[in-house]
Amino acid sequence: MGSILFFFGIILIASILQTSTGFGFSIMATPFLLMLFLPQEAIQINLILSLIISISLISKIRKDIDFSIVKRFIIGSIVGVPFGIIIFISMSITTFKIGVSILLLVLTLLLILNFRVKGTRTRDFIVGGLSGLLTTSIGMPGPPLLLYFTGTDTQKEKLRATTLAFYLFIYFISLVTQIIFTGTNTLIWESSLYAIPLVFLGLFIGQIIFKWLNQRIFRIFTYILLSFTGIYLLIESLNI
Image (tube, rainbow, N blue to C red):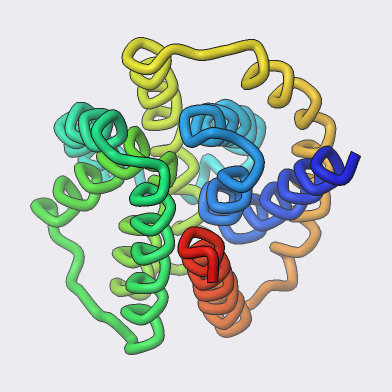
């Protein structure tokens, strides 16, 4: 019973974060789902629910999407996806968890140090490729997108809309790739089905939060979320 409540809590909180920030679901859900499921199951549950979230929100935020950047992200991700699945298949569970935690902590550090980068077409392709690689390998396309958009001082509305538009493509492709190369099972789809009502509740709450979440609070909240999740998963992985 405790595991079920923990699972539902993860999904609800992650859904709220996804709607209010544009990236929170994968970053929040994947590390904690790894405590309840095998990596393959955690990633596929994350991909299924993230795809549902993106489909649900995209029509409401269409006006804020930068379609030219989304196009370049998609082209770049096509290159990264096959490399990601190779990494996933070859990694051990412990290495997998430690890799995710270190990625989150490095990302947090770069953001706190006020990492800056100028957006270019070439960098759009590179970021898309890294995002595609991370989606099929660990189920988290958000870190390179978040770092890139934050480094270019992208407004939160554009960040949320553009990442969600890209997620529609990358989550679908990554889910299909995962199923083809690693298979799937009933537990994944049943767990995803049970979580859907909580996803929609989280979407509703997240939309309310987004309206009063200013840019400064957005940044602080980002740092707290990433650092807490990274440290927690690292400690859990190393059995400290």
